[in-house]
Length: 277
Image (cartoon, rainbow, N blue to C red; front, side, top):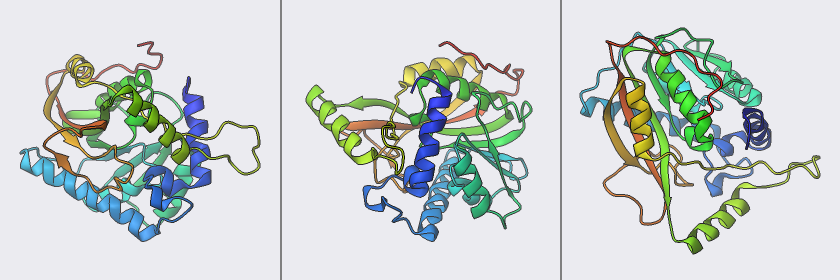
């Protein structure tokens, strides 16, 4: 997908086709087989695991500060965060996802949702959020945009604030296995949309960003990297059942979760909306 508009159109098609499955793409849950209560419970489990991890690392989160769920979809994680924080924001590129998030959370005054169609977060002032979390989102965004989003997320993070984000490091496989996986993903994630004959099928595409690249970016952004941990988040049947792994999978996508704290001593980063990296 060459542009953000392409990305938006792809995820809007997926949202209209099967929104809960597009977020937690368990093959067994396709064709509207997610139970709503079960789906949102996956978010509670995931957030509980993340908060437990922060406590184990000695990282304190400011309960009174606003929090951000970047790439919120229908608010699976936003609503879970709202059980722990007073003001929660979810942003997403898909209008349908945002509308469904508002509908699902219409009785929760702690949840706010915003449609973000740009590669910046200009709605929010510098240093607004005390905690930012994003999971199974950046792995679906081209690296040139993902890098800019990471810069923006750090800009809107308050000094001393915490950001936890997940991204795919690389794909481990022989050439033959890569071809088999590519074909399997195509069969699993592509389907023609009703009434749109001739249009390209929506796709769930994975993108990788190596740890070395991220460390350089994070160093440029003047944040302290507190933790980098292998996770199972890139598995098709992840479903919010977050696990921290001691070793990489033998084959497949290598997923990592980064926990960073914004340095108190540096000024906020300027908005970058036309990165060519």
